[in-house]
Image (tube, rainbow, N blue to C red; front, side):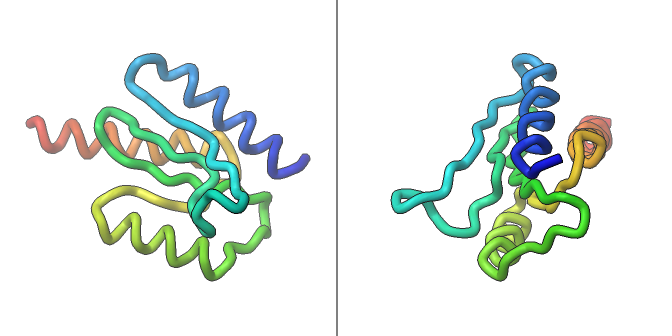
Length: 102
């Protein structure tokens, strides 16, 4: 399995969530920002940054800083290795929303 396979599976899962989600795959390159997570997502109004890695894969220093900045700004950013990891992030957002609206 390659990292792009993990990204493809995550994108497929996110697409299955319907109108509650908007996302795109961030492509690196000369016009992008270094360290930005692989998938940028808005789920039910919450900003998510998902950095896909294979098990054992390491974050670069730029990726670590970007994740820290997103979390400090009130978004959720993290390293994910699978669709199950992303499901856990989605469940966290859903739980936060339920707790806020109770």
